[in-house]
Image (tube, rainbow, N blue to C red; front, side, top):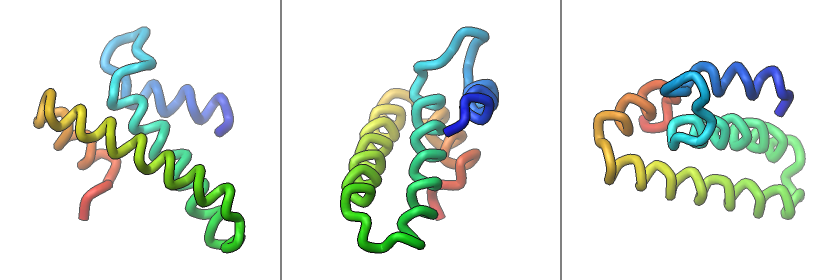
Length: 87
């Protein structure tokens, strides 16, 4: 991910001016990487190392979402609404 795009994403999801590590920011960054790798996998179906990395990122995002859900359900609901993760 390009650094400008990453900074814009952090700016969009941060809670305070120096925030880079809250679950919301981490989940947003992971979602962006997951979307990028998903597009890559559509054209490179046999790229199994990328597939493994993608599955690991999905698992990491899932764990962060579970953490946020257990800590603050309202922040969780707002975040999945903003990212459009649940159907």
